[in-house]
Length: 555
Image 1 (tube, helix red, strand yellow):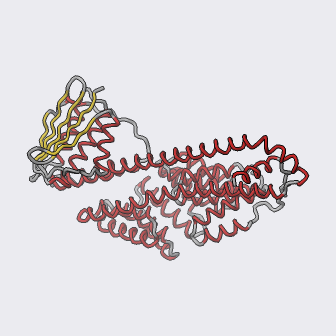
Image 2: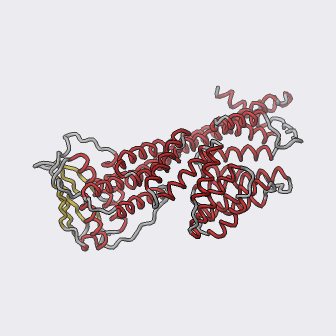
Image 3: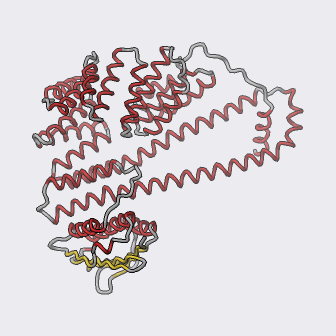
């Protein structure tokens, strides 16, 4: 098999050239493209992506730049719809390279679609300035009046997000002139919202009118948009109505299997239905935990499809070239074979080993990224909300406003979970107070939390990064205490020396067994301490409960 492969490679080196036929009907459907369109219309976007990729390679073979671009644009749209926004933008940029003749009407239509996809993907990524730039490029290339009105709506929506309400209304007033009822309902809803933000005009008549149109058209996606808008409006006016629309949004999201709408609906319900917030939060967490890996798999799947198709095309090209070899060159190939064998073997071995190393590196990078995001989700969302729950449970005097502020802070932190956060400077006095409040949240009639040595001087020589890691570790210890230990007394003792800070944690709970099992939270604590060259040890309290020793180096 090895020698057969080497022979094929050598044959390819000296093979004759193949003349590629010119396509006189650019952009016409080839068989894979027609198959992809049927699969897309049937809602089978993953299979459609595969056949669009096949179609692209076939168009490239026939030098059909328009067909190549159309295939890539459809692939990019599928990626964006599957929340692979970076991949969608990347594929759109690749498509743009094949659309150079802007005087051609078909090229202009495809360019406009391509810019629209890049704008939508940029908006999902909160890059609103980029989204505006792409929408304006798209509208400049659009000759169809109805398409322009869709762009007017999209631009108006972006300007509203950027708080430029007057300019947004200029575009939205033009968008509502559309004859398409679905587009009209969308623009009407957006205009009412913008007018409400600008001058306080009552948006309800237009909100209900848009909802009526969407219900008549049996448009569940549009209906959910209306439910979300109405739930937000009634939040400060009539909580019962707001909750009712949030539940309608949840039911529709479950019916059409839209995880994004379902997460949004559950967020609203958590804030509005305090009596059942724990049940709703568990539902939110379950959906969130299922969506994140699914989206990661989708991104990997799209990349794998493109890679596999490319390899298949290369193999087919090699086989086709092999069948076209001129027999008159057989003698030359045999003479060159002996000379080339050593070089080919070296190249094959080199690239095989290199490819394996690259694959291992990519897998390691994916695993590290997943671990990093999992840790952030655990710290920001799970521990953050559990802390709020504990605060509410132990301190009934906490105001609703303060609770909403806490949840909103967690919400904003969770939205930024995929971005690298700059280190926030916290002075020693403020951090001392932060630790005091943390311990206080877990203080109740059943549990007494005692702080010893938590002074401003204790934290004076600790860097902000080290403070942040210590805070997360202490919060994890207190949460685990409340969940599992059944302790009635917890002590946190802080003492400093010339080289480090020592924190001694002790409780009188059930302690740990002789063979403790360290789960995610405990592993995160160990990793955090190793990250800052610190140390953490877990010991069973000689009397009863658990003892933990933490050592953190100073600057």
